Image (tube, rainbow, N blue to C red; front, top):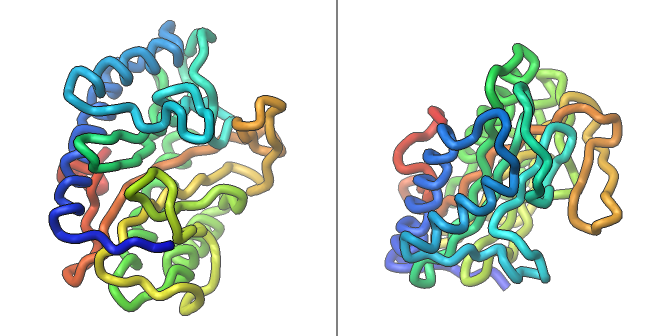
Length: 254
């Protein structure tokens, strides 16, 4: 069932999203060569809890961690672990926060140490694809308008758009209806209504969009071993356009 949120509920989710964005900002300087993704996990969980929040991913469908830390060819749902990060690694850190009942969900991508032109371009295209999708999150538009904007741009730049994992509604839990594919046909799908809160979170690969699953049942990898990048925002559909809840006013800059 799709739940439409009141202005008060959206404000609550925005407060949660502001804390989430702040955690990501802290990671900009925290992430560097020689740390591990387990160090990121500990830092994130401590930061969330010390600011009055709950790491909402812990226990969701038996997931054990506050973060998903997906490195290089890992598309999503990578477990935090004690493998040392090296210069040039591309890491995606995805997390959810419950702050006094307000739920938020956002993934940012980071380069460990020095980047490369290949990684820079992948990150730039992925971020732009997300914002092109967000632009379509207007009252009266359809879900297919979001997916079409993302797919047509990213594929036009020579990248693959992951099909197996999609955006979703959010609140009162971290995964709600409707599903928001990052591919599709304009003018098709469910019509967007004021009060819906969704995530848009394209996962863009340097090669094929196809994937394979780890035996752990969670982590997805690119089928061809290429790099994968992701950016994600939670946003509310309002009569004045999409309201991004997880940015702290930094649209397009992080």
